[in-house]
Image (cartoon, rainbow over all chains, first blue to last red; front, side, top):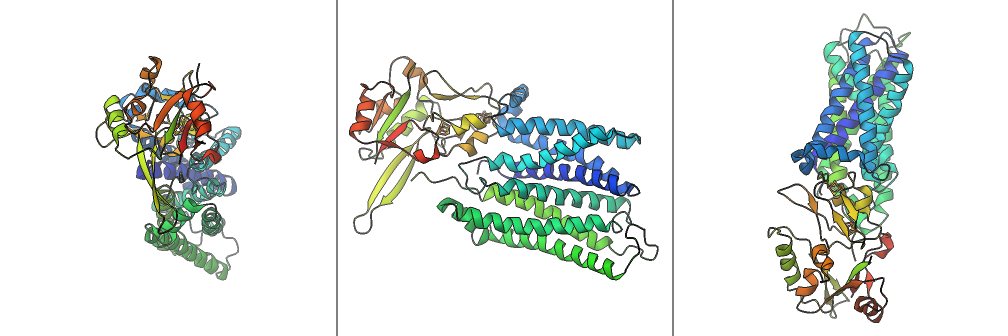
Length: 299
Length: 179
Ligand code: SF4
Ligand code: SF4
């Protein structure tokens, strides 16, 4: 395929950035005391998106040699999804950088700006799926489930990145946020479901689509698909986080957002494993979707 | 203003690759890059099998997905309906590569610009045929104005019942195949 690992990183990082921003906004609103998570999310969003966008620039070799040409990226609006995405990502980058800087300075941000940020974060997450979803010549991509799947994965990996980094700064930052964990576990479950719905529906579309799906399920990419994406990226974090929530339930804490004084760091290692496996799975998902793409036949 | 198209009679193609080599010379392409690709397909059932040879290049779609998706506007159609790439605008994002159903797009490894068959526009403007047509030993290719009902190509398309590849995709390709 013309698009390989670099574009996978781009799609992945843009998604994580959007998800981190959304996580920070949600946590900031619901749990004002959970400062580490909010800060981490807002601090992560701009650099992740910037790095992702730089990767896209590196993959566009002709532009790299003539950087002024990148201004043309804004030209084919609204016809080209890539142009539309360039606008969305640029605006989101401005908004999340502003948000991050204000967070750093300890100043409050006008809530309308944050709301606009939320809209453009969702837009960015959706765009990463739409960019390839509108490509009619590749049946594996050309389905309306794909952008939804990418949005769900963006949220899930965004939560993962935010929680993971937060944990390093403040070990107690996360395990008391049961709500976030519950959302996370549901997202992972939904993602698992969407992947199989997508593969079944796409696989029945035509011969090439079927071959693409088969290359994932039983062919060339099957080990990466089953072990990397399904087991490591989804089932393991789903189980660990699920058990954790279940145990929290048993512990019958009066209010889950109260920091428990008794537990020293009960969920540090599980958190570490859950969130890193989710991130690994998120990247593998993008990579596989690009790698297994096949163009329709001419006969 | 014309609406240029091509007819390729696959029954006359002897797979000598003459057109591909001539095209590579015309466009200064290295041996490993080509604008014309050959596909083979077995038709019929044993023992009456037939190998069909299909030379494929940019189909100069009237409704080109590569142009629709090109973010920079580098891909455009000229007044005669020939789809071209402005090498000074192309950033090499390869969105056109994934968008083209005919896999006709070829990234230039030196410049990063994505290229493809240009219907030898400089020849056509001189009133000549593209090099692949001029060079074909089997006379398998005809080039001309599809809008002119009296042109050779228009008449032969009807006579030989030539049809485009995957017309169902709605890109309105302008290369007609006799198969
Ligand atoms: S064949 Fe491909 S490159 Fe040529 S005009 Fe159609 S979509 Fe574009
Ligand atoms: S590679 Fe060049 S011609 Fe192709 S879509 Fe990108 S900018 Fe347009």
